[in-house]
Length: 267
Image 1 (cartoon, rainbow, N blue to C red):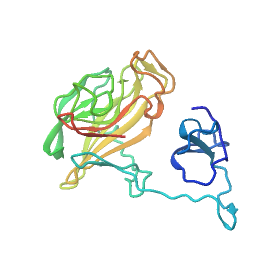
Image 2 (image 1 turned 60 degrees about the vertical axis):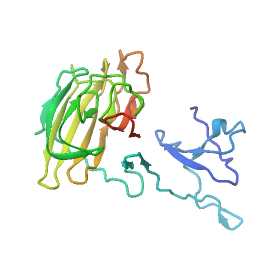
Image 3 (image 1 turned 60 degrees about the horizontal axis):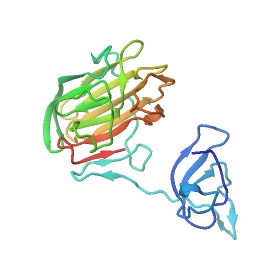
Image 4 (image 1 turned 120 degrees about the vertical axis):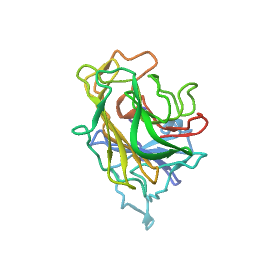
């Protein structure tokens, strides 16, 4: 998308689907416009400057009115997905476990480790599990793990099912990259199982590593993803099926998928 701005939003509703504030001097709202035919609104998208006068009056009324909606996702089983930026969303509270958690998958590319004990029973798509598998490619598995490094959309893989994907991408922990850690915290019946992928780089090499974690909660069976850093820097040597952009999840799959592959949620 090219960086073009307009104040020609006229007198109808627009749906704000995001914003871009990477340039502090020129931030803008990303709007979906139902009228997509004018040359300054290609593909139904219009970028509106965030530096507007929000108090501007037109014929005695506010010219700009923002209405927020509670947007969430729900799959057939009943799982819902909510972002921390949404109303009633989860609170971001990073849990660092690399100092005293159990390390797995150092110096690795694509393997997984199985039979990791949770310390409690966790119900996932109707089945109780007491252990899981961890992949260095940003995946947890309710059953058998997978070495699949080419991530695919939720419910679109023919071979990889029954997973939790905080950041499914082609990651490595070799060389100067970090590692993966897990730890069970708390006391019954409010324990939580945390897996942290710390400073993992993109295949084959990247100048920086990303850090993220998945948290499984006892009792509620909630799943939470948290992200500390999602910037790979410069990526070199990636496979032909793994295309940029890589930063901020641009090349990753994030979500959950049922063991039979017929249900799931993608962020």
